[in-house]
Length: 158
Image (cartoon, rainbow, N blue to C red):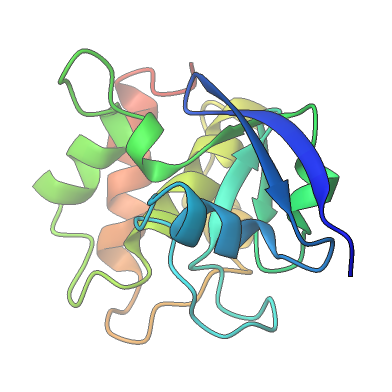
């Protein structure tokens, strides 16, 4: 299978690479760019651990081919912090203990960024609905909802 040249921006840096057309975006991020904060959980879009932002919209990167990201801007969990300062959602997840094993955390945070961009002051129910496609097998989601609400109160929808 002939490779294709793609150019995309990931976390503010432009990359040009030759990739196989069947390479998933999650594999490209992890294996080519070393962005290992984007996790592979289920390969079936059920868990959301691979969630990233593509042009500001949350996408499960296990369902998108790297060639489909050609010409687009991708933000990973590593790209949320700026100038060494955690994004308000990263900070809130830490302060609210919104994680246990941490496997779902990057996907939950990335989905929450998208959620708050669409609704900067969601109710608890709207947070739960907004995170519906992201699974946590360890927590009861209470602290995750609390973290999103704390970040919303700090103006995380940037």
